[in-house]
Length: 555
Image (cartoon, rainbow, N blue to C red):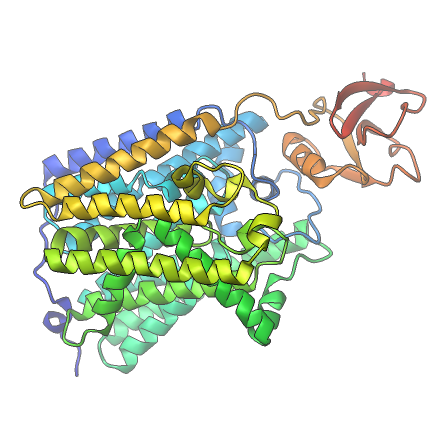
């Protein structure tokens, strides 16, 4: 079949938003930013280390500031750090830098609201219904949690939502502009995080498939592939420069671990069970809406004769989600953490898209179909959660539980020091029942669903607010000026954050068991078991696991 725009559209064009809608979108965007600014008003320092500090130091190095030797650790790609370079161009003060990074993350996450509105309108949700639904979706936990942290996860949801809209437009209209957008965003995602490699692979596969099937103009397909190639080359150059400067002796080889898992039966069992755990978390962490979206997308993608663009978009999102879950689980080292078995962060980048897909099904499907989708969501949660729990066994109780990894499930179950999968699943099912009941109202379905979703998200904000960090971190704060040396015996959770605080020089490492601080250094960070400082040095600070010394010659 030759390419014809009418054959691909499958739905009437929606009119551009009027001035009133634009004002409401702008006001809603401002409120979304304000919510995050209030929620993270006390954030002045990295709390999710080593990830946050890795990105912050990469951004500082890109602006000509000092780096640090991160050899042997996870490689933090430069695509996200590049967005933070203007912040380092404005100030050197670490606390101010971090506050501005939170602003960047808040602006990026709030951008989901207008994009969500556009997606809902594309899927034939009326304008009056789309606004409250998009606004409620904009406060989803996956968008709130990471917008206040210096992590790539702060921008990935917005990036992937924009990419998916571009893919839909490419399949619907076949325009060169949509091809350029899809190619650029897909390749940029690969420069931001390893998960983006899946996004890029799916982008290329979709474009090549449509070209081969003559469902896409050659100009648009060529533009998409050329744009992806150019951005991919630029991203590789950026990441190559970062690797050479900050990882001179190499970084952690997660891709090698993934290949090993792909090629062994035990590795496959690990990867598939971990992927099931991620899908379970995705469903319960969106109150069952992602489960509805998954079921609806599978129906749309498999149904012949439906709108071509919608089928392509559904299949694209399914392939991306399953690919990320499987590949990230395969590449995840066994750190004896509960998060090895059920983890929400890696699929957080697509969580809001699935939440929106679930909302569309709730407000547009017939009531009998809504009930079937809700039952399918509950069944998916039970199957994926059961598979993950069966594979993990007693490790769900014996492995280390890190509360930072489980905010949604802790909110659901009320258990803050362990993963209660049955409890979280039960409360998520109750929320799903409320959303389903609202969708079955004789009138005002969309308003009812939006109200229920907003109430759940407000409750989550109330739960999250007291947990935001404030006050000091109890870690060394070297006096500005002069060289700073850190004893190799100081644990990395102490030494690495110091690298962010010391903005004027690169940290020097030395073995305090064999020698004293390097000649010419002004500050030394040593373990609290180091004893008295050598002649010419005095103690200037102490804490759990560390002591700081200052050379008399430096004042």
